[in-house]
Length: 214
Image (cartoon, rainbow, N blue to C red; front, side):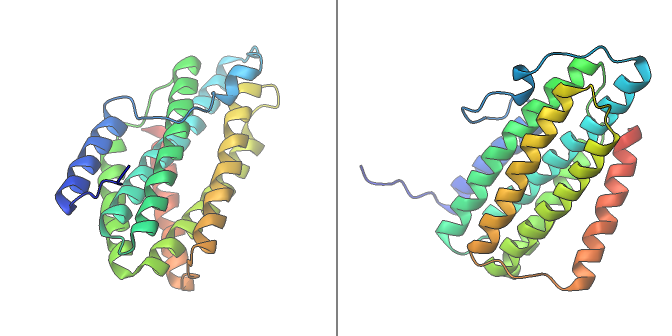
């Protein structure tokens, strides 16, 4: 069967649809089960629940941002195979969105009210990264995922040891993010300049500290 080729307008409309699904609907997920389903629910006290819900809210907001980043890059990626890698990575990140949201609801928390802001900003950043060239776009993905892995390690240290469900989700997310970083580098991603990395870290710190409360 001949593969269908989409026009720039088609890609734009698909990205609008994905954005609406990310923020308001149910994103399309892969066939993978929720890792939390394989472990038993622990008896957490109120303080432990509040902390876990806030950490999962940060991770959910991070996945919303990741969606925006990937969609922005897919819009401006020059090579079709790079665009496909971005779109595939975004689909896998949808799993994380669904898992985090499910855990937030179970813990009695809420998603960040600032998610539309994070998404819009990330689309813009992703599009600019794509315009800079595919090697820089892929390098941006790799650095983003490396920073996410460090955040996940920090959250795993903060979570109560008995909260097996939250930990199962974060452990699988960590594995996936590391794989995405490796894939981006193998596809030709370039290492970003040190000032760019520091700016990304500062932006991430602002987002995580704000999302912890809102």
